Image (tube, rainbow, N blue to C red; front, side, top):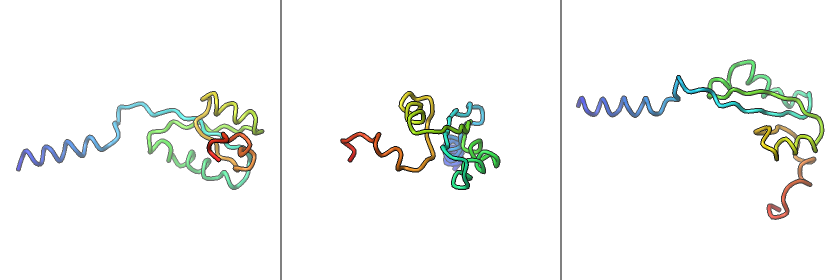
Length: 95
């Protein structure tokens, strides 16, 4: 019974995120200052990114070309934007 309890405790500890691990840094871009982007700001203000181990930087970028360039160069990790401006940049194999 003691072995089972130790195994269960070990499994539970492994399932929890490491408290000593550094948060993963991500840069998130939003392309408009509008209510549609409120989830980004609320998540940042309420510490939701931190809760899940993300050190998130929120960056406002205007324009499809600079946003796509930053994404393609791995300068940013993700973009919250409407899809229409980005459709022309999708590879033809994906269509």
